[in-house]
Amino acid sequence: MPELPEVETVRRGLCPAVEGRVVESLTINRPDLRWPFPEGFARRIEGRRVLRLRRSAKYLLADLSSGETLLMHLGMSGRLLLHPPLPGKIVEAPAQKHDHVKFKLDDGTEVVFNDPRRFGSMDLYSTASESQHWLLRNLGPEPIGNSFNACYLSECLAGRRVTIKSALLDQRLIAGLGNIYACEALWAARISPAARAGRISTLRIERLATAIKSVLAEAIAAGGSTLRDFRHAGGELGYFQHRFKAYGRQGEACMRDQCSGVIDRISQSGRSTFYCRRCQR
Image (cartoon, rainbow, N blue to C red; front, side):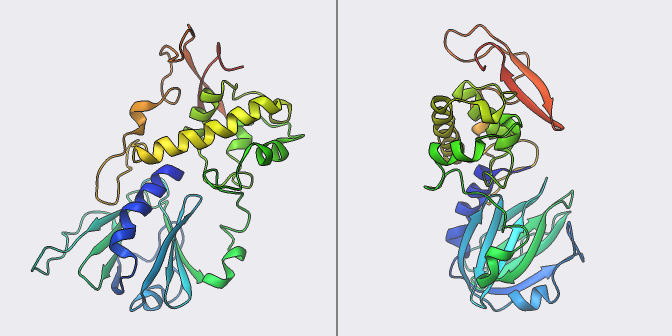
């Protein structure tokens, strides 16, 4: 599933093309995705201007001139693909299998939501009531924002008996951090994913907070990680997977200098965790 860096990469790719544009038409090719579309979905979006395209955790949020916000989640295999207009021509992008939603903008640009597995979703709500939306109201701070730091991380981990890996994936504590980047941050901070969250020292928490920000920043700069279905808005692949230090490297030598360990894989809460037993303790 696309994580924070992948969704942020899509947002940055779409922004120049969609912000300030009017949605001229909206085509829906099925009645639902992960759940049904809101009542009057197309009618409430058509003719509205996209004022701003934001991201909250793993959700894309498009603020419309109607005072409503369009929420989009890519799910397991969803993609938002951008088809700019051809100069001097009005040509629609050829339809592909699993193209479920198509936004046509007033300059001819098309944004197509393609999702083979249909775990993606869309919703429409009053922008003013966003803090009460059921998908957003319980999210913790953004790990790349100013409100996330070692002090916050220390406070939210205090007394917790769950493993640090489980704590990092709790969206109520940290919004948008997923399995891949939790593994990478723990490797960078030299912390075992099985360590009890409430027993990690202040010094190591400071190291972890720094690692989380650093890993996410590097992943965003690389365009995210391409595992199976992820594509940029323009169709390109992400490249951060070529820089993985832990994730997916089971049986390979640890890349840390002067470490002779091997990357191991364990299962935690049904998810694969990759780490080095020798240098992550």
